[in-house]
Length: 139
Image 1 (spheres, rainbow, N blue to C red):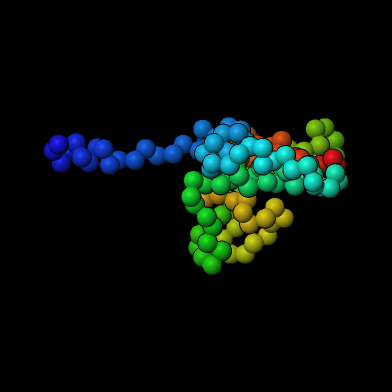
Image 2: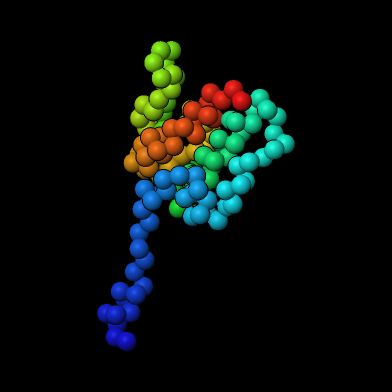
């Protein structure tokens, strides 16, 4: 085997976060069993929201592919989806992405962020149902 062949073998394929299209895809990538989101002992009034946020934690972990935010680094951008609750129409919708580099100002938890705006936009659109369940669940 020559040096050129060896170099080609060592090149790792870049992970495409868009391959995570469902909670099940995220579980497959992270090694979690999808049944983890069916917790029968949760209080009924909180169950839907707690299951939804658990799903979002796993989805973010899969899409972030090993990246974790460093909250001690104010120069590291951290992006998250931004939603609006509408009083008329559909009631809930994705509005865009945002980032914060100096201080944290979010009600969704520090685990629910990414390293790029592109990932935050994707998650906000692809997993809007999970966010709606997390924010507005009445189950």
